[in-house]
Length: 190
Image (cartoon, one colour):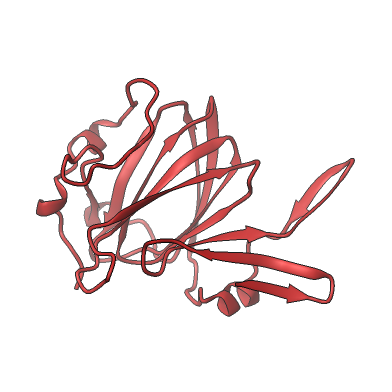
């Protein structure tokens, strides 16, 4: 799906294998000076199916092979609109919604400052990423505030999930993320 105006396409939308998760590719206006793109427009997002209100913007900076996740909140579920300003990541979404046709499945999407893709991950998913480049600046909008007491982590290396993080060496993982639980023990959503 592509939204268009008289000047051309504003945003391309590509479905993924996960129910409700999709990739957005904004129109980029570039010349010798650099480029301009619209990363968020409430009207455009609503026309593409994202009608949620965003209440928090986050900015993460990480070095190569930093692996963050797989995070989610149980009482204050967050939808996330994720993009990379500088660098490249492998972004992972894992469906925790029992009623979904893609329950228990995951997908990895390359996001980078170069490809300028934006990933929409609705509520009910665990989310994580690994930095592929030397470093990366990851920006994401969230539909609910961060509540530490509500946060949970699915083990990034759960053998039942078989997530291919495309590692080129050992991952750098926080102590909190090292305590992630297997998918079978994670709190799920109806």
